[in-house]
Length: 89
Image (cartoon, rainbow, N blue to C red; front, side, top):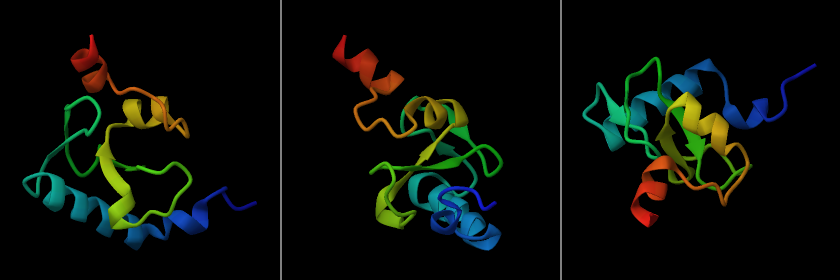
């Protein structure tokens, strides 16, 4: 049975290109900060977090995220990131 949303994520080549693009666009080409907690991520640890949950994995709808923040956020658009929580306290 195919994984839910698999057709949206693209194939391995699509995911590789997406990671490489995020490293360049949001970082220095080698590392990038997690959008939510600011931890440094490399190619192996960066994940594409969709800005609009359930939306397409398009460049305008992805931001770099660590696994912990991406998993915590899930499909919850109202989730407050650790970085934002520190600012609002």
